[in-house]
View 1: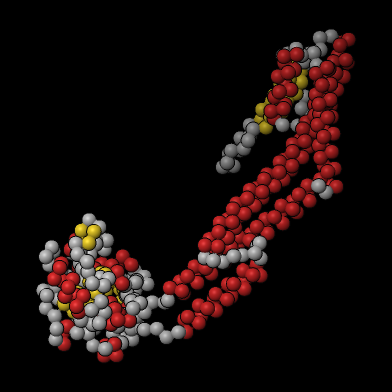
View 2 (view 1 turned 45 degrees about the vertical axis):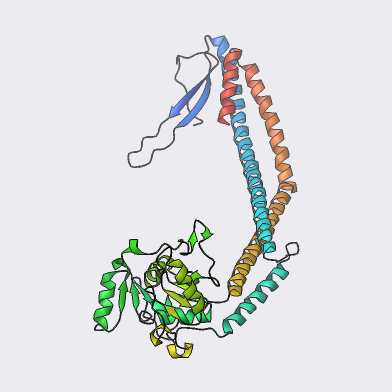
Amino acid sequence: MSDLVLAENCPGRDSTEYILEFEPAIPALKRQLKSYCLSFLFYNVYNFSLQFSGYKKQQQMATLTKRRDKLSQSINAYKSLFDTTNQLLGELKSQILETEKKEAQLKNSLERHQIDIPQMNLHYVDSLITQKKSEQEEIMKQPRRSCTISNYPRSQDVLGKISHLAQIEDNEVAKVISWHLASDMDCVVTLTTSAARRIFDETQGRQQVLPLDSIYKKSLPDWNRPLPHLRNGRNSFKPMGIPIFARDLLTFPEHTENCQTVFGMLLGETIIVDNLDAANHYRTEVVKISHCPTLLTREGDRIRSNGKFGGLQNKAPPMDKLRGMVFGEPLPKRYNILSEQIDLLQQYRTAVLRLYKVKTELEDQEKTMNTPEMLKKKEQLADQEKTLKSIEQELVNKSECPKSVVSNLMRREQFHR
């Protein structure tokens, strides 16, 4: 727009800045373009004697205005570069603080596991991870009780056979509960009746099935309910040994909520006690205050909820007579502790590597800020700002506008920059 010329005798206010706004109208273009604003200074020349001086003055003002605009663009570019760099430095410093906080938290967690890490020593961390993984592998090689009957293929609506849904740590407890639920161990649990019916049809009715959507859940026991001999947190009598709900000795590898529904229905309030004497004593005292559920002993005896005990029907056979239809044994607690420690060590390792990386980026960025090239740009910015201030003052001196108008123009220019 360097060759625009005003028509002769155009009306206007002498020594005043005007802004010409161009609004593009392109029908073929879907998006709207931003308007372009062109500012210029207007002067009136009333007679021939003033024409030359007015023209010369206008030329000088135009030249100064162009210089001012170019300097403003250059200054804005420099400031944008430095602002972006300073913003990046701030973000890197913030990341360092966050990562240091995370590293400290993980180190405290490791110390609670009796693992003391030398100051961010990754070689030591790697050796610990390797050591603990080796220990886990050794645990996995150790023989454990397992259910040898084949599980039913699991799917979205099929959880599997009851014998595979739970695990029990204690051998004697596993034996007596597995025997107590012997008739249910081969049953396949499904989420829906339609899935149960499909299995029934596929096996021509030979496979037991239990659909969860057919269970009346309001009749299920409360897993947080206290034992019958406890009233308001106090013993109604002193039991022999340590009675415990059978359901509390089960662990569920997965599908915990659904498994609680299944075993809540199958076991109900069944209680495990030490031996038959302890069971008889417990029942005798409980029936004085409440109904007594089925009692199982660690020695393999059973007292039914109706009080009947004795005979082969109420005595669990040896483990080998169960023919593998027994609940499996969970991994030792040590294995789970090692898994948690390994996870913490790996998180700690990641945090330390992240901290190293961010610190290196910050150091590189700070070095970049102090290179001869960047220092030269800072000097150029200072020189250009000084020159711009001088040009703006010269424009004020050459203009015949009132001081208030000039002040408003300078403020508007600073706002645009």
